[in-house]
Amino acid sequence: SKKSNAERRIKRETAQSVLSSREQHVDEFRNLLLTARLEYSKGRSYDAVKLQRQALKFGSENLPRFDDNSLVKAHALLELGLALTAVCTDFAVGEEWRIANSECEECFKYATRIFEMRLVSGKAVLFRSDECWINVSGEGNSENYASPVPFIERIGPPDYISCINMSISCQDPSKTTVQTLARVISFGKYYKKNHCVIRLEGKGGFCLSGEIPIDLFDKLSVTLENHKAVLDGRMTKEEFLAQYTPKDANKPEVRHTGLRQGKMKNSGMKLAKDIEKKGLFQCANEGCHNVERQPRQFSTCSRCKWACYCSKECQSTDWKRHKKECKSGEAVKNRTVYKDQNKDESCLQYGQTQQLLTIVRYLHHFAALSEEMMSTRTTESTMLKAMVLPQLKDVEMGTIQLGLQEVSFVWNALWSMTQSD
Image (cartoon, rainbow, N blue to C red; front, side):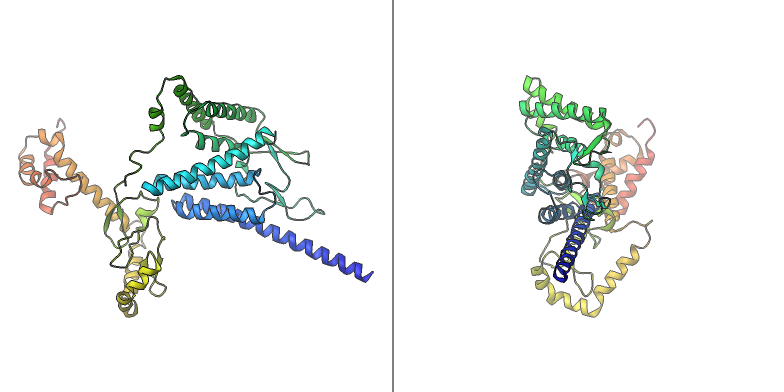
């Protein structure tokens, strides 16, 4: 009897340990997805991609029913695809763009395959047990459930329709794409007609899922018509692809990026949403010219918290120079000054200041060479044409910084223009 009691106690403790571990796994997976979404919303797409990959690996190792038929796995794949899309749109160029774009397409295809399997088996509007809501309290208590995703209303049909919209839009038109688009539009209308109801496996219950945006059906309908137009010969494939392929995808897009040191850089990378406020680091190694693609990408010196490096090799190479300013306190002083200048949120930050100066430089250049200025016949415009135009002739727009006197000529000429000019 004592032995059987001990065995039951051990089994009970083991079961409680498993349930506790399952709850921790659910929470950790959900936090990974949520943190990735927050990073994505801040424009830190590289960090979002990294976290989404961790979530997929973690789910495969620790979550129940996280298989090739899982709506939760399809949701995580869709989130990774969205983050990769942002990388392609805001940062990547050239070979990096092609690699990220290829991985993005694979994520959408994988997720679409899961949704299509559920649709064929009649389980597209069915949540399996321990899939979207996982029991973390054991068989004795069926009321304590936890969801492994932060936005449960998007699981299932809303994810499926969004995935098709993202994945098939830019694919080469074919009979398969036309059939898929027609099928998902028909399914979406059926789903909305039935009030967005999801069934629960084995419980006989129902729940409401998330609404599908009305404009999403409009986008899918336009895409369907474009695919049909290509197959019918009313549109060429080149015209179709031109709508979805970014111009000069293989060439760096030149943008002026504000650096944390107050300098400017013609960057081949597009800007994240918060770069213009926080500025970007440049590698402190004088022989290296790498610049961050997103805020906080580089590591900083653990002592002064100011000098930053793109790699351990650069930090090791630069230590002979940096240790003098690091130990003397000069680097700490620079960091203090930087923080003081960033205290007032109403002030322009480093990146914002440089961005504004760049815009002003373009404004001066454009105003001096405009057709309206050329047709103006005033003393001030004559002075501008004589003193400023020779400096701006045959140079790229915005590459010349005018002096104070030349700027005054530009503004005097602008103020001398009449409304008719």
